[in-house]
Length: 160
Image (cartoon, rainbow, N blue to C red; front, top):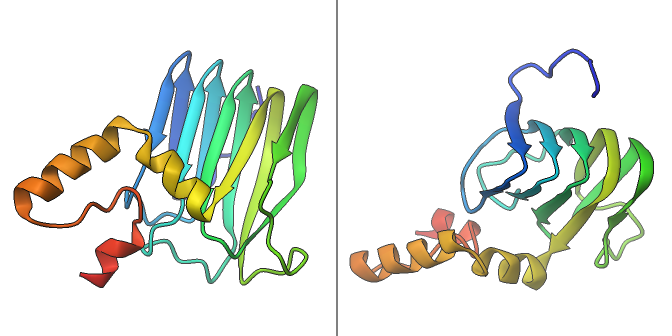
């Protein structure tokens, strides 16, 4: 395990042999610390409340887990400072079309052992969010309130 100083005012996520999902508009933080072991972690970073003026940073300490990040389309991901041991990689099937010079920037650092980081953007991110219990609860709430669901598209909450 990495023993570095914690980020100041970072959103801390800990998962040990479990599944953790934070979907929709759940935070306005721009720094995250994730410690996960034999787990699955899903973070939705598409919220309009997240300020992308400065790079959003994620310091990860992963062991045998999957970290799935739901991102806006124009985010460039920098994972140069991410140290791998064993198997694993960053899976980014839909990287920015401008060759990594998107308007927004995400910096991944820390360690990862025998796991993977999946980056979902656009429609794939929306489908990932829709395949959750949180989306089902949001649909029920929206139907009851005569409103629209926001878990699948957090930007919809800002339009109201």
